[in-house]
Image (cartoon, rainbow, N blue to C red; front, top):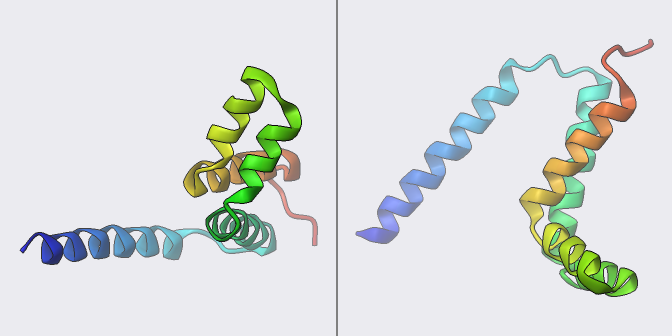
Length: 94
């Protein structure tokens, strides 16, 4: 019973996310930001050693903080969206 409820819950969240993406104006800028952030998030899931090596190269308490932040796919993807949105600006030049 719990497994079925979990499937319904995650399915509902996925559909809500797709509905939100359907309402966004998907120009080149937005598609690039979305693709890179998904890629970074999936990359952290597929290569978990990335966060360990990143934190180990920095060292100390700050290195542990960086490692803990970038070991989560959601955090990595979200920070990528924020960073790219700030860097790329609002308007798209065609």
